Image 1 (cartoon, rainbow, N blue to C red):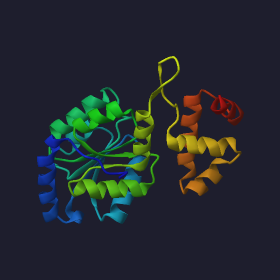
Image 2 (tube, one colour):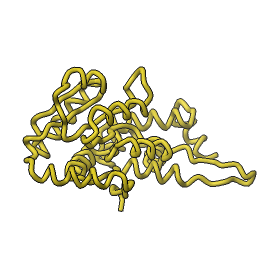
Image 3 (cartoon, rainbow, N blue to C red):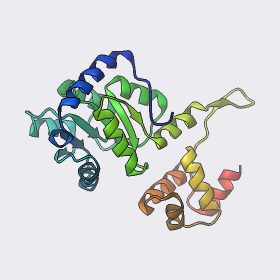
Length: 237
């Protein structure tokens, strides 16, 4: 089933401890950490958590180290983190620090999809939820609820990216070839070459115009094109 995953056995005991703990604590008494470079993202996540889950005690920071320095005595019941804006250390080091500072706090990665081999390492380092920033915010709500109750969750866009990555095949020369676009990017690219504007695509897919614009930019970058005409030509090759 899309959205749910099986976790490594070494997380089972910790997951059970979290379930028992959270069954005793009302949601509105939980402390949630949001670690993201951009204040607008921090604010957006806060609004979603407050409106749909009832969480009001939310702590924010732009990095793991700064969060730890600022809130040394806090032990959040959930951490939502973006790795792509963390500077100075690798993503793996960042998650290592997170696990070191908060070994019992479940963490959700709220970022762009990565290759399955890298994502696997993320989960080994303690991530129990993964939501793409291109996903609808309802995915983040569902993920937070699952993880708070001791479960794990992977969003639709992340799952699609994994499936696309796994579907590596060999061409006639025996060399491995990967399709360059995710299933969502392929869908939007089709709309674009058919003449639809980003606002029309956003309305059709019930997404924000800014989200479609971000995906469009990613498509152009991957396909190494600068306009729709060149994109149409590249896709037809």
